Every structure is written in structure tokens, then in C-alpha cells.
Amino acid sequence: ISPAAILRDGAEIVQLLEHSNISVSLAALELLRRSPDAVLQQHGAEIIQRLQHHDRSVREAALGLLRTSPNAVSLHGAAIVSKLDDPEVAVRQAALRTLQILPRALQHNAAIVSRLTNSSFAGRHAARGTLRKSSGAELKRGAAIVRQHENPDRSVHKAELDLPRLSPSAVSQDGAAILRKLDDPEVAVRQTALTTLGESPDALQHGAAIVNKLDDSAVVVRHAALRILGESSDAAMQRIVLKKHSPAIVHKLDDPEVVVREAALTVLGKSPDSVLQHGVAIVSKLDDPAVSVRQAALTTLEKSPDAVLQHGAAIVSKLDDPAVAVRQAALTTLGKSRGAVLQHCAAIISKLDDSAVVVRHAALRILGESSDAAMQRIVLKKHSPAIVHKLDDPEVVVREAALT
Image: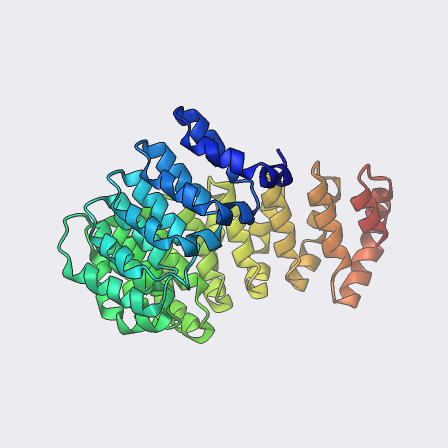
């Protein structure tokens, strides 16, 4: 049924909300979700009445319908807030999600803040989600309530960390408290503490504490610590931290978890000096059992042309890797060093006959995109017959690249 038809027959559809058969009421609510906002505003009172229905699914569906109209939520906010005390957890969560669509105009944050101490985990979780979209004053109130509330469930402590994440200044101000949470017995709290810390531009001032979590027992915590080290917007501080703590990061290249080994390689790649200094350790990951780690090792090496030249032979060995992505990455990495291209030109040319089109194309791209005209002349003079042969390649992109 089109929105225009719903607009025309809106009154009749709304009447079905009171049908004795719950399935009919639910179908009417679902149908109204596709209606123009004008219908919801016109019949808001009837829809609000469904919030008192004896069946939980009808109350939840009515909240879902209201969530499609910011105007309706604004108009009937008090009625929606009343469902924060609904006996059913799912309805309370639905009410919180509905209130989230008015993050700035919401006048009921006090009621939501009180849910941070709800006996239900789901209730607290939904309240946090709603408050994250609210004003700084309400965030502070929420944090204060959580700090004062004693609850054995660690999600309450996690909430305290969640609240200041919207404000880097708040993270800086509460840094000591957040750092203490890095040693919380709950994995979720330690992970959230790291993520919260990472929201601050001054996060790497706590570099030692972050690096210390590289040996955490939980993979998500180790990964979060590496992500903060690698994603910092403070390039100068990042160089200082990497220079000081690169041995600890290199140690993570042998972590039992693939995602941690990948992340460690990515972090090392942020510093060409670290790549050159720890080239041997990085090259050792070219034989990692995980394809993504081998690929990440090549991507890391390319950050330092000197490292590429120094470890050219090891990189060339990856031109015969069983994984297409690794062979392609090996070619791209070799292309970062003029010396490596000259030294291993024959190996690069051999990949013009690779079974994978992306590899053949990558080999031609390296030969054609060099900014070193002298080197290009040397290569073309020696290997032009092999390139000419690619003019008859079955793939268009390869023929085009050969001509180029």
C-alpha cells in the first residue's frame, strides 16, 4: 500500500489499533510505519493509547512507530518517558531508543539518568546509549550517579567510562580514574577504558600504561591498545612513543591471535625508522600462516624504501606466495624502492605471466609508474619483448597497462 493510500485511509487503519485480535493491531501499527508524518501527528493520541496495551508486543510496536516521527516524540515525550518504568525490559529499552531521536530537544534526561542504576542490565545499557546523545551537563550527572551507585554488575562501571567519551576534555580531566580501570577485573571495562582514553588527543601521554596492556590476557584489550597507538592524531607524540616502546610492539608480532599480529605490524608502519630498525622481525612475518598477516608485513615494509631494498630477496620470495593478495602486495612493496626494482626486475617481469590478472596488472603498473626515467629506459630496453607479449593478454586492463 502506498503512503498516499495510507494517508487517505489513515483513520480506518488507526481504528484497527483497537481490534481485539492482537495480530490485527500489530499489522496496523506496522502499516502505519510507512505512513507520512502527518498521519502520525494527526492520530498520535490513538497511538499513544497503545502504550497501555496489555500485550508487550503491542506496546513495543507502538514505540517503534513513534520512533519514525520526531514530531510525535516531541509532542508525546511524557507518555514515552512513562514507559521507562514498564514491567517489561524490552519495552523500557524501546522507550529509550525512541527518546534517542531527539538528542538535543529532549527534556526528560533526568528520568533517563535515573535508569543508569536500573536493576536490569538491558535498562542501564539502553540508558547509556540515549545519554551519549545528550548535553554535557546530563553526561556529568550520569557519571556522578554511576560513581555513587554500588552495583556488583560491572556494566555500571563500564557506564561511568562510556559517559565522558563525547568530550576529550572530560577524558583529560578524568584521566587518572580511567587509567585505574585499565586493571579492572572485567574485560569489557578494560576495553572500554582504553577506547575512552583513545578519544583524547592527549592519549599517548599515557603511552606506558597503554603499552602495558599489550600483555593483557584478553585479545580485545591487546588489540584496543595497539589501535590507540596506531591511530593517534598526534604524530610527534606517536614517534616518541614508538621509539621508546617499539620492542614491546615487536613482541606482539608473535601474539597467538591474528588480529593482534596484524595490528602490531600496522603500528610499526607508522614509523619508517621503526620499520628499518626492526626489519628482520617484520620480514619473519612474511611466512606467517595467516594471509592477512603476510600481507600486512609487506604493507609495513613499504613504509621504508631502505627496508625494502635491504630485504628485497625476502620480498621477492613472496611473488610466488599461494595467495593472490600477497603476490600483489609483494609487487607493490618492491615498487617503493628504485634499487629494489632494478635489482629484482627479472622477478617482477616474470609476474607478467601470473595466473591472476591483478598480479599481472600490478607488475606492469610498477614498471610504468616509476618517476625514475633513467631506470625506466633501462628496464624497457631489456624487457620490452615481454611487455609487448602482454598486448595480447585476455584481460583488457592488462593490455591497456602494457600499452601505457
